[in-house]
Image 1 (tube, helix red, strand yellow):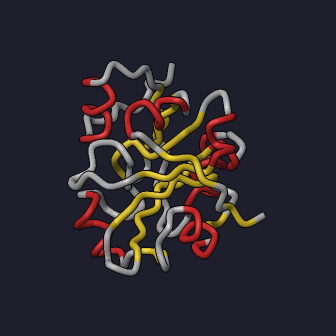
Image 2: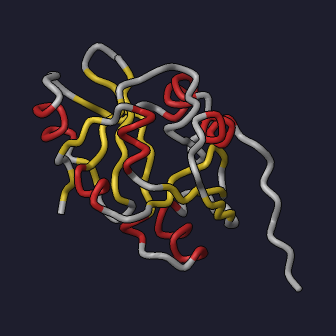
Length: 162
């Protein structure tokens, strides 16, 4: 009989428990630069429901979080236009880590070190359930995507590149 791998509490799971959010745990073997294609393959789900947490910044170096389908890229031009800034660019890994408090590859939008505005690809909210990083490398949590709006005040955007 195989025993489920125990995952220690993270800032993200503490945050979810404090806010009484039901979630499922999905540990996998983290692979450097494997991204959502690797995690979805190991867990056995469509990459479209695995949501990436991206730490980006505007032209004034103000950080923001973008939540995007694993199988899509973000059009930073479209995003900037929709959120009324001149430009948006990904943060360098060390800067992203300082803002979020998480290691790149283990970034969760829940329980971040700094409060940042959160933008979510609108079609993510149409999914019945999503997998999103649980606060460490090799660990996803399954939640209702509506919790992103309820807990993080996530603003829907249409910034996916097809």
